[in-house]
Image 1 (tube, rainbow, N blue to C red):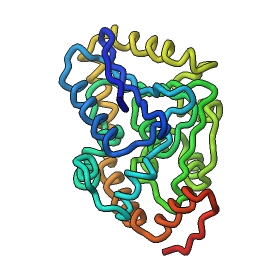
Image 2: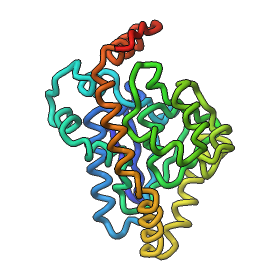
Image 3: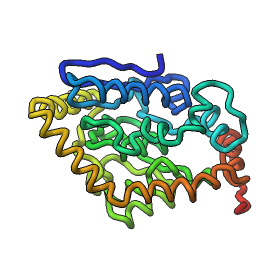
Image 4: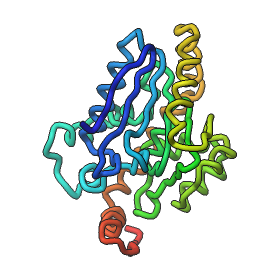
Length: 268
């Protein structure tokens, strides 16, 4: 099962578990994520959600290069229900990736290992972030000839400084958890991944022990204040970035990644 979903007291835990694919986000797991968030929204017993990885060495490797990206770049026609949903319900896909503040409870993301591209963007869309020191973050889209369209261009400058955010986006380099903690991206930094869930649950239980109406009210207000120009910004990210996904550069970037060679971008 690619998605683990269980509840402990007032805390819902959502775990990514695609072992061979390193938790790459394919259409099926994105649709399952959306369904999990919908269930959390409806369950009044749930007061906090934790998104985590059930794999030992990685949080998420980003969008699946074999399934999601070919459909998004129009290199492959959609065949399954989830693939059709991926290209017909942009809002739903964004909600699955925590793009629009869809979940009506606080969302904590627990990160260890590599947190790449779409996985990094989900971390940006969460309310609170806990990471172990082994966590490594990267927005590699620029190296693939693709512009991020999962919210990174909008969220990251609001979470760390705009100049730091542009550095992360434009260089496509790796950034360690210690650096992002110093830059204010992370709420907690723990020594090892073995401590990660304990630290996340401690934070979740503390929040869940408070008045649920008060907590949800503060979350709602924080998101609404942030959203004053958020809808426009996210809309423009899609308008500018989506055509780049269907460019020849995008297809070349993905081919080069698969063939383990430097890409030969042509700017078209």
